[in-house]
Image 1: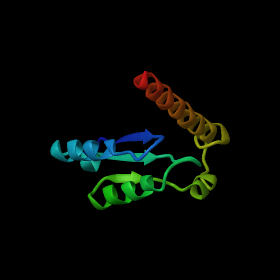
Image 2 (image 1 turned 90 degrees about the vertical axis):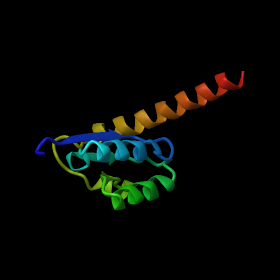
Image 3 (image 1 turned 30 degrees about the horizontal axis):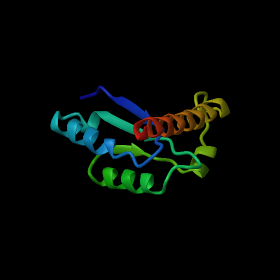
Amino acid sequence: MSLRATMVLTPIANPVVLEGYRENFAAHSHLEQVQVIVIPDRKTPSTVFLRCAELRKKGLDVLCPSLEEQERFHGFIWTESTRDYFYAMAEFMRAWVAACRQLAAV
């Protein structure tokens, strides 16, 4: 089982979907082959960190760095532009969810 995959999420709410992923990975014997990186932003609710900690206890390799930890990231990939991209993506997703809620209310 040397194949590894990394999934990166920028949550706009509590990522309950990760529980389903964890169950699927475990059911198909891929739990040890997957790493999940959750990139929170300034508006990320604290429940995201709790969810990630719960999933880590259940065997999912999940990394959820705080904003302070993200500021200390270094390397050729993790630049100010990369960080800005994830923050912008989270903002766009929040706008999308708000628009969908407005349409659903009509």
